[in-house]
Length: 161
Image 1: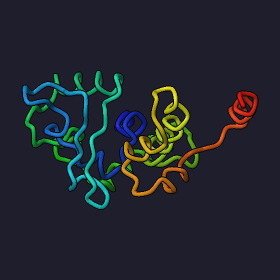
Image 2 (image 1 turned 180 degrees about the vertical axis):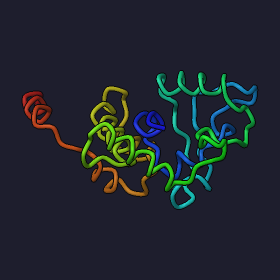
Image 3 (image 1 turned 90 degrees about the horizontal axis):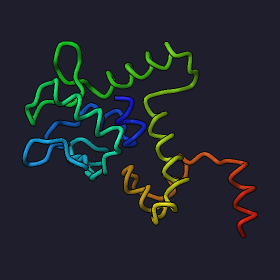
Image 4 (image 1 turned 135 degrees about the vertical axis):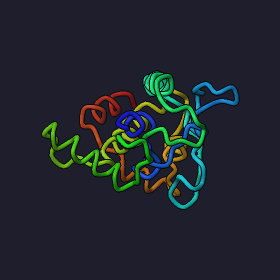
């Protein structure tokens, strides 16, 4: 769950709704994209997210020892049933509480993903519009609200001009 949040920028609802059919190729292998269906996203705005290498390795491992039915949720409870968005939120809350991280929530990984992506998008030849589309925001203004500033980066940037 943590990698889906921090390495794919997914919301709690999206993590709860992702099924193997959204991750697997036609041959039944973990692909290189997560194809979130409209029903899994906010405002029924499905999107495709390229899978980070670390996340892909974890999905391959999970798939190799778990349930392989395409309609089965990737993330499920100890009882083998899918989780709700609220259950995912509670899981993250307990995780961060145990780790002693104050002020963190299920959205913290998503925020970190957006900030990191915004800092590195130029290196990939992209723009903030690409970050916006990756996280499924309707507006660039919403994406900008997620991005944390960095004083050192500002100093380096000014000296590049």
